[in-house]
Length: 134
Ligand SMILES: [Fe+2]
Ligand SMILES: [Fe+2]
Picture 1 (tube, rainbow, N blue to C red):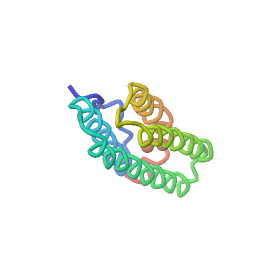
Picture 2 (picture 1 turned 135 degrees about the horizontal axis):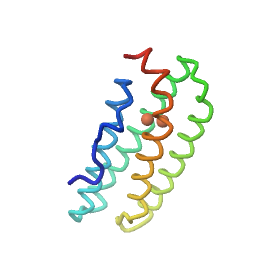
Picture 3 (picture 1 turned 90 degrees about the vertical axis):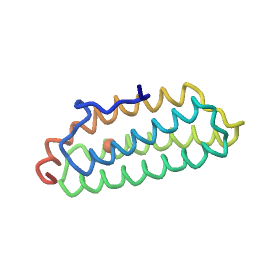
């Protein structure tokens, strides 16, 4: 069983965003599996950098769609993205400064991201963006 499972409750009906969320979850699962298998810092570093890169692109894409749709929750959502990126960056900085271990706090952060963000505030734009993008 994967660390994070794709489930119907994550589906927004905004095709581009659903596809990108699936990629994010796959990357999170890969990192979790590699850590469980005892992967080295050298192996984990590009995976974590890749997650950060895909996340930044996803947030930018999501914000562009929200802005184009004049979504009323845009400002708040963009702030939450910024906060999430700051937290992700702190985790990555701690990882780079350390010996290559990734603690449970990082995975708790990823799990919260999935449940509170995608199932929480991303879901709120679905009725607005879904009509335009579908
Ligand atoms: Fe998202
Ligand atoms: Fe979002």
